[in-house]
Length: 117
Image 1 (cartoon, rainbow, N blue to C red):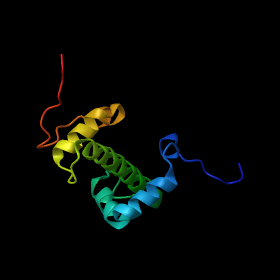
Image 2 (cartoon, one colour):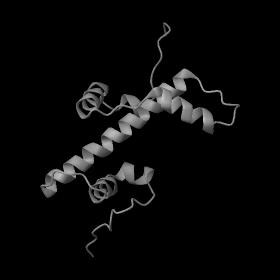
Image 3 (cartoon, helix red, strand yellow):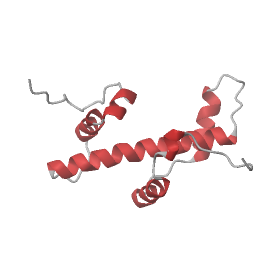
Image 4 (cartoon, one colour):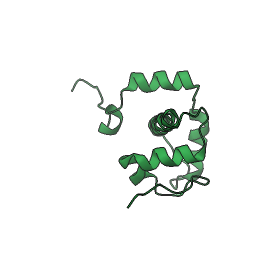
């Protein structure tokens, strides 16, 4: 190892170029200064947060947000609608197995999941 760092498997599984392209196309920007400020107020170690912590947290938030928006967009294409509503977010999250385990809360205005016996 000549000084190079390897990223965790969770981030390397995403196609980073595609994610960055989607972020720029959707004009989705997370400000690192704002996330750094939020982390400093919530950490218990006297407000000490490193720069790499902020970059890592920001990249995770961006990846998760683009993933949910992509799934909601696919739901909209299936329903032939142009606007994303909480219902479409609910269907997108509950349709994906990994996101369903991550997001266990209720999406307000999402309705119920159709279940056929």
